Length: 148
Image 1 (cartoon, rainbow, N blue to C red):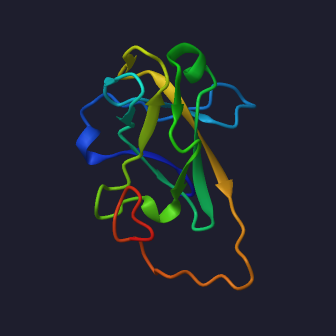
Image 2 (cartoon, rainbow, N blue to C red):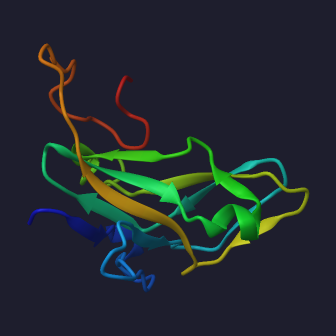
């Protein structure tokens, strides 16, 4: 197992589709919403994907909004890009469930439908500095848990 996606236990019966690249030259794996989420105007909403990602220790998954998300829904990712670390997979807090936070910039409710492709994930290697010494050996929690 080098890298890929799995469905988290909570969503095994939700007909979740594992992300796929649409063409031979696509960098991103299209990610769908696991549940329908309605986001009120000028507010944030968390969209579950029902997915977790496994990868090599020197890799990360970068998750971006699909280019059509703003044009069709007037919403953006709150943090621009989600960074999923290798040790997020199967963490004890939430099994590594990838949940993405969107901000509705419009003046009306927007709906992200279950099964709607709204994000794309790109696996990437990363480099470390010469004096790199992590403060934690292992992740103890889930969403936003490093530094706590």
